[in-house]
Length: 66
Image (cartoon, rainbow, N blue to C red):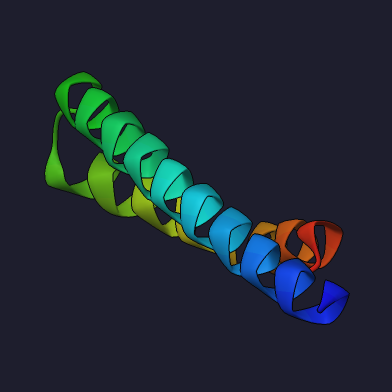
């Protein structure tokens, strides 16, 4: 019974964190879109954010136990 409750809590936390994280990313990207002008600058910033996400997402997922 404890394992079932733990599994349900982990699923709930995973859903809430995923939804919160997705909303934070969308809000940040919308804000950043208004600050960057020019196609080259957008590619550079997008590439840097992509590289940062490539390395940070597995670290955060590991810390959260996902």
